[in-house]
Length: 166
Image (spheres, rainbow, N blue to C red):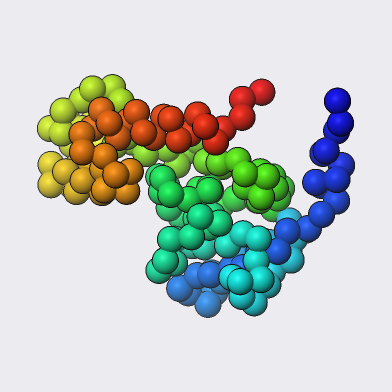
């Protein structure tokens, strides 16, 4: 068996950083550099895009730091990610894996998976029924699903096909 870990760890990844706030952009660029990667000036020159969640267009290369349950992204990280965690996440995403911080799991999706009604989801999460409906409609639209069950099945299949378990 060939060990690719040394080859992957020796390469730096070209990362384009985008954020609506210049201070956040500077902080994220510093985080990329601290993680041992190169911050580039254009998304066209990048292997991955690191965003604060305010990016306008969806890009399958994008990693959102602030977006918790974006199903179309290669990764979601906590805002307080460390350089070591970012390094691991960038390398995993560059290798084609999905990256999700456990604390950013979608609570609405978890509740749907438990079979809760919209009213029970609203109570559990202490949000309005309208907000629950909005989030569920958004998930259905993003996944191209017409029912909650279909959305769960599509999401689980997408995660299964793009996730490696050790």
